[in-house]
Image 1 (cartoon, chains in turn purple, yellow):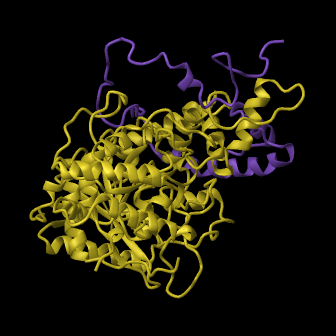
Image 2: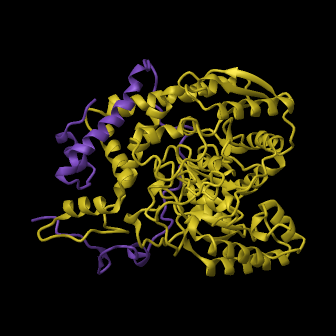
Image 3: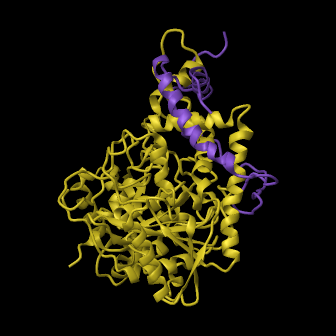
Amino acid sequence: MSIDIDTARRVAHLARIAVKEQDLPALAGELSGILTFMEQLNEVDVTGIEPMTSVTPMRLKRRADVVTDGGQPGAVLSNAPDAREGFFAVPKVME
Amino acid sequence: MTALNQLTIAEARDALRKGETTSLALTEACLAAIEGAGALNAFVHHTPEIAREQAKAADARLAAGEAPAMCGIPLGIKDLFCTKGVPSQAASNILKGFRPEYESTVTSQLFGAGAVMLGKLNMDEFAMGSSNESSCYGNAVNPWRRGNDTAELTPGGSSGGSAAAVAADLCLAATGTDTGGSIRQPAAFTGIVGIKPTYGRVSRWGIVAFASSLDQAGPMTKTVRDAAIMLGAMAGPDAKDSTCSDLPVPDFEAALTGDIRGKKIGIPREYRMDGMPAEIEKLWSDGAAMLKDAGAEIVDISLPHTKYALPAYYVVAPAEASSNLARYDGVRYGHRARLGQGDGITEMYEKTRAEGFGKEVQRRVMIGTYVLSAGFYDAYFNRARKVRTLIKRDFELAFAGGIDAILTPATPSSAFGLGEMADADPVAMYLLDVFTVTVNLAGLPGIAVPTGLDGRGLPLGLQLIGRPWEEGDLLNHAYVLERAAGFVSKPAKWW
């Protein structure tokens, strides 16, 4: 599978990573190389095989539905690049 | 006389209990060694105040006669572990300045057992790499050199700082994490021991996530006995990680009987790669001979889907990474890009992630995004997960056939020079994980043990793969191999 420049641009946007227009051809080439490597998987007969969801045959643990922690807005916000009045602050989202 | 920082965990534990030394003395010896080892760039955040305080507390516990095995032992902690109040960056600029408000379960258990933290260790960014060259702190450097050649070599990756620090005696042991070989490959490149436990043996809570279905933490140590001691302190149930097993943790050190008579060791024919260096071939057959001499039976086995492990891994791991790393958005922690006039929230995300993530991380996030995107999910991601089922089945069939452990090389070569792979395409770098990724895909325990030197005087290691949840038996096999190989070489100090 070869990735063209438009696909590379779309993938970068889906991943929310800004890529300069002049860097897209190299990126497309790299991604194509990796995908070609992955295409070996098409040689494998996977008829009737279940995709793995858990590597250990275990049921996910459950716990009581109770509050175990909280009430620490200061700790939660302490690493935020921009926090105001007890909230995370971001650029305007709606026009 | 052995300097205090050169001791193994077991030696230090015994000396501490006999009152022959103190944790503070061990800690000062390590801090001095770290001070003089800036050229290795292994420690990237230093925490001497915390270390001295923990050492004094450990000495008090030792004096009171209440001392678990890890009490007073100075350790290095991989930067991937969140440590309360101490920078925890996963070697990424996107987490610059991040000081967690909480402690990972692993470090919490180690500190609870009395262990001492000397500082945080270098690694590949987000644990994505096999050479420690993708770190925001710069390369970690292998204390080993090719004879008199002064070229700097990689300590491997992603736990490169951990491996360099242990090999250079900057700490008694270190924590590592392993998603595709990141404990075992650097251990092999630096002549130390590293074990990746069974998936679910050690809690992942508080460890920065790369690929959640593959990640496991484990110890990187000077000996197999130390790996057994330290793994015991790291492992165990944790209500904060729903994939962490409730199985009780056995006494791994007690499993080191040195007796493997009657055990069956599998030699998988698919691991005999085309163009494998003669030195690696010989190391492997010598290792098999050592286990045979110890009374084990050597059996040729087949793991037919081995060839597909790397491509399956490089679908599954980036897919999970793209999802895990979505949290780095410049809102809750870490770096946020400076915004231009009129930039909205999408520009904030895109610029923040372009500035904060390095090239390899960006590449993997984008590959992961692609294989999970509409129209390709079945062709790539689901197919890879099906192949993963087949890879695990290969191992299950081998173990069902009576195999107790599987012996393979740990790496396809000894440590290479820093920068030597710079012009190689990403896939060439991925091939370095060829012997280790299968173990993560199958969730099995695997251990790297140093067993020899190559023609240029660099360490080489073998890998043993065990049955799930039987780390004790695996460690015992490794212990036999370690004793038979008698690997005692240390790097000549140049730093």
